Length: 125
Image (tube, rainbow, N blue to C red; front, side, top):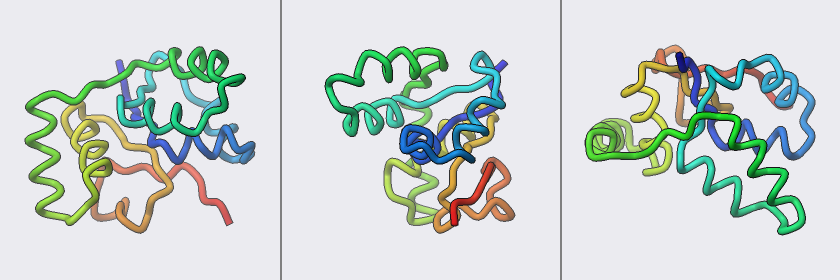
């Protein structure tokens, strides 16, 4: 059973050797953790060719959640209601649709007190 959706920033922190991100990721069970097609694309854009196979293998340990018509409709509602950028609205819609936590550091857009599907696993100072 899935219980978390990792936002791109969490994985970017891990790949940038931020210890809190790596510790958080290592604490998770991959079979209970997912990423979206958005996160996969965002991560792959920033990866050097020589690291691509290693990163793909890492990403493949997680379930990849797609965007379909229902999620697109939820994202549109969330974007309209909260003024989020479309990628943030899609990430949120996926979490809402699957009843899982969206793990992010983006407290600017996602207040975990206001949005109960948000999990802020660590802070970077």
